[in-house]
Image (cartoon, rainbow, N blue to C red; front, side, top):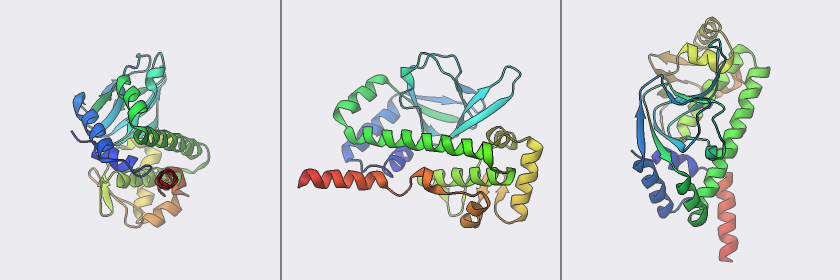
Length: 253
């Protein structure tokens, strides 16, 4: 298994050295587990032991009520890390489940202790990753609280497409899209009927094409306008790299 998607994403924030690449590649290949689709990787109430790196496949973080109602609160794509500091907690306050077959690498506390001492660029990149994840969570709260059904759905599709592009997982204007209408309903707070109606509206407007498990976005700018989407919360402008370069130049001077 490769850490290519993780490295590509982290280098949006910080320029990593060849040694950093090697450290991440080794970590992504040492303790790998595979799961089928629609199963839990970890359940609410479990004691967290390791940090999970998604190597391949799609997963989600969710909360579930006793009567079975579920709220998806985030999607995990290849290259995503499920909570860098999760082992600080005594027990999980949410569950992580697969959507497709998934491969993960378990990153130990010792791995993080080691990079904290010897690989500061990786640590900085992980901090950026954590801050971006918090920004995504805030945007999801705005989505649920203020946007209309069409805006929520269009916004979520924009986010997923851009996150996949950052990880190098889009082809032209298309990407894999294994989410069902039930998944979209759980993530947007809509009923499945409402999601179906909203997707039909997006199709009719030529904003998306959904065929099988593939999503195509013919005109990303139009879809972004439909979803009132501002990509600033994804921090794709290489702010971390600029800061990293400034620190390097200052040290050299």
